[in-house]
Image 1 (spheres, rainbow, N blue to C red):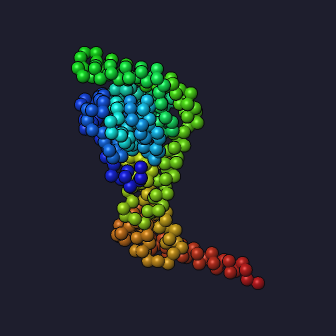
Image 2: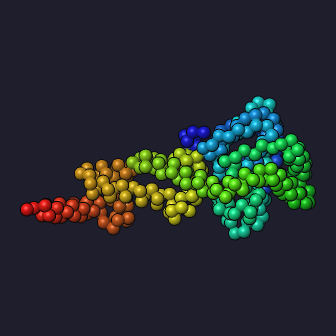
Image 3: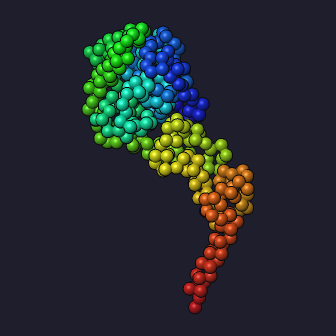
Length: 319
């Protein structure tokens, strides 16, 4: 997926793609698949029962053949282009349905910091971008049976249905975890998610540096460059820097402006433009709020300091 696609990607709520608000399972005949890169607010599992294809998740493209399962976290940009006449199952469910007690974890985006042994059912979702969950015949047969049972129970939703559905869902995930347990534990021990998070921030940093002078620089454009949802990127920047995206970009712009004011002879209006401000008065206000003095006073102070340094250098070099 290209970053430009991510800018226009839509985030779907549970109600938009499910008949119920907590859990929903369907096959390929129930409703048309989404054909554009998108995100949703809920967890999703897709099971490919026929028709080899590929899955795009974040900035990664992985094979998705028949007999494979895909585990998609909320707010992850993704697309699985199912070929004509393919067969698949889609399971949508909320965070509370999967884990009624989340041990004080308020935000699903914090799940990546939970030790894998504390929440093993989250492991396939956390490492989907780094591995493929392809099932052998016996496991696939068991999972197909569980999926059929979920379809039947979800159809009527009689008393006790929620407990049954959650149990079948956890069995589905448990089979995948057992089959791929060694690789999941290896990824966890190597902290691949944290490495991926650092790589995402590098992409964001590169995008911000390249577009610092543009008034179109935004959380959405930066998120697209890193193949993240704006919600996830805002969370990530807050976690890593303690700042909001706007505060972080403003700091970068003011730092760049200080360098230009001290070392460049261009007008303050032009410098404001170079760091993304089209209104000189607004730039001056933001600069004063951050630095404690106006851009013109800052420039004057540094010119005086520079002259003193030059004079000292001349005196030291004099015979």
